[in-house]
Image (cartoon, rainbow, N blue to C red):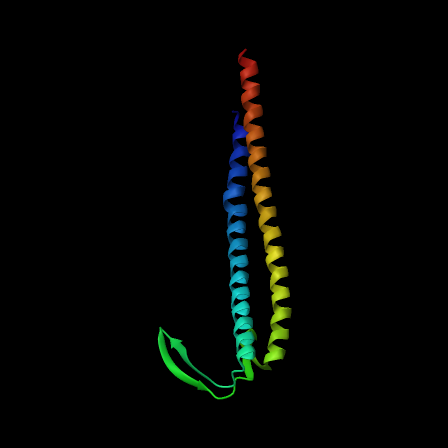
Length: 150
């Protein structure tokens, strides 16, 4: 393969390794974070629905203080709960308000997951296109050299 084509193939490989693959890893990691948030809100929804269904107004539970150290906690009134709405802010909601907030949050998270999935598919397609282009350059060079030899 002549130097120009070798150089092109090498630049394509560097572009894949230095740009596209890190972008793909980052997009997958961001989507995974959104999946985790989605799971947290799904668990919260289930807990609130169980509290409503069972008519629980008081609760005794264990609270993780950190480093797997737990403390017993008594919640005398479970009709109001504090929900982390992001950026370190917590808002006091009734059960119905919390369920409404969770529904809207889940819709937003679903949209984010869809956007990240499309971005991931786009990056994978770009990687395939660059690889295909690299193979085509190498093939054309090989075909050209083979033709000259015959």
